[in-house]
Length: 108
Image 1 (cartoon, rainbow, N blue to C red):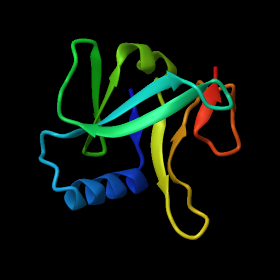
Image 2 (image 1 turned 90 degrees about the horizontal axis):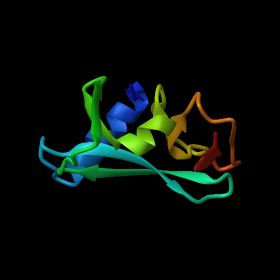
Image 3 (image 1 turned 120 degrees about the vertical axis):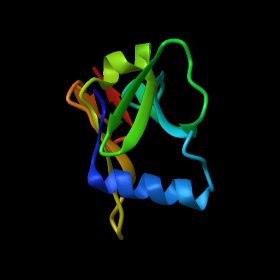
Image 4 (image 1 turned 90 degrees about the vertical axis):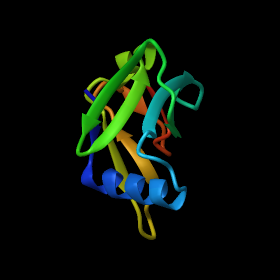
């Protein structure tokens, strides 16, 4: 399961509205090689499902990830922090053994 915090839900709804995205769009989360800790998170809007996609809905937000990425993301919570010291979207990933200082990459 992938989880969506209230803060992320509000920001996602705002971004979808600003971009005039349809209800067919969803949040796609993936993991790729890279970053200072070895693996990086990718977050985008999409409207096309792939055969190996894992589909979740939490807090009214549809989140989709490919099977390979899901192995790294299981039980992760998508969060959003705004304000003067806010860093935007972040991932609270219980599978990560370490993360970099900016929070955009991790290792397992």
